[in-house]
Image (tube, rainbow, N blue to C red; front, side, top):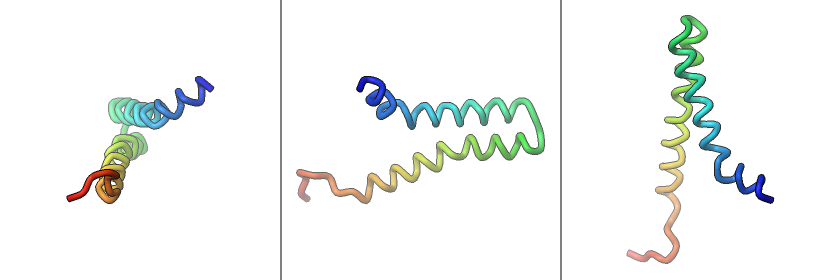
Length: 66
């Protein structure tokens, strides 16, 4: 049960961290394919953030009335 809660809390942040680290290392170490890999790896967290922000704006907040 403890392991299940760990991945619920830290699953997505761990994936974002791994993508960012992969993108940074590939940007520093290579050209060609590594440039594409770095763009995709560093762009994915930005896309995820924008998607979740837009998703959160569409949801009404319970208990609030204006």
